[in-house]
Image (tube, rainbow, N blue to C red):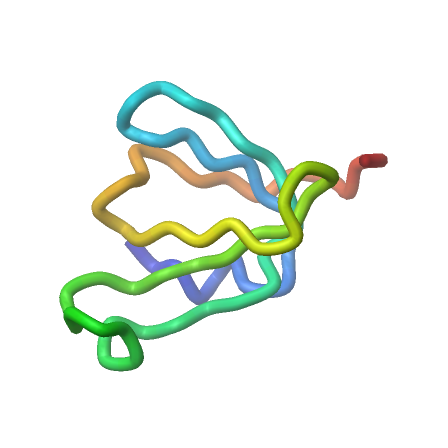
Length: 70
């Protein structure tokens, strides 16, 4: 999955456990910048979380969305 394309955009993430979260993607890290060097990572910001990070192994789907009000 190409995580970089979502950096700086509003996104909706569906996780493998079925949870859905929306927010602004404010951080992108390649797998080489992570501790285990296995997966790329994104961080999103929304009304509930200033920083919520996750990696490719936790995601089943990501889509860009229009800006929304928190």
